[in-house]
Length: 239
Image (cartoon, rainbow, N blue to C red; front, side):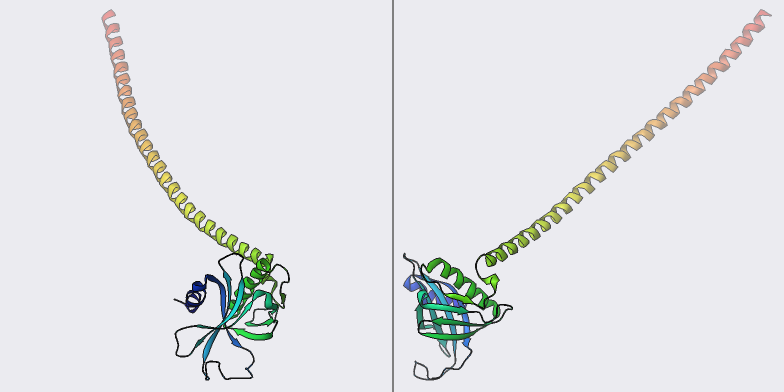
């Protein structure tokens, strides 16, 4: 089971919440106080998680989750409601990059995601969630690629689906074409076989007709010879 699946199972499901997306991050800037709240220093992994309650009315939260070195469990460290989010800064709107900032009412967090792809997925789902659940004031999304915001992202997804479906159709067409070619080859073989059989039958018939014509010619020749002989005999008897 992946770390994100474990986080959802251990931290959100028991509270009747579902995690929409999570991104593994590291801070871009060092903390002023390196002392951890657990009572010491140590390495840890950090995830920024977006979750929503299952019960209505829905409540959306952004939670910072950590897993400390040597521990198999995850713990919640900080949590904000989506209404406390003021700005999402994608850093660069012209290219993929893993950096992003989250500005809340009480502070700014500057992060580097484990990959540009993870960051893009997080921002895309975060933007969609804000559009759906923020009824009054929506957070500002700045320096974010347009493909991650609104309809263009959906359009890209639709385009990807269409490309995939077209590829499937082409593959299916190739299979059908191969099947069709196989059928055509079989039909051609059948026709060729039938033609050969018909030709053979005609040849055999022709041979039979030829033999019959030869017999007829022989009979006609014999008849003519008989007629000539009979005529000679008749003339001889007259004389």
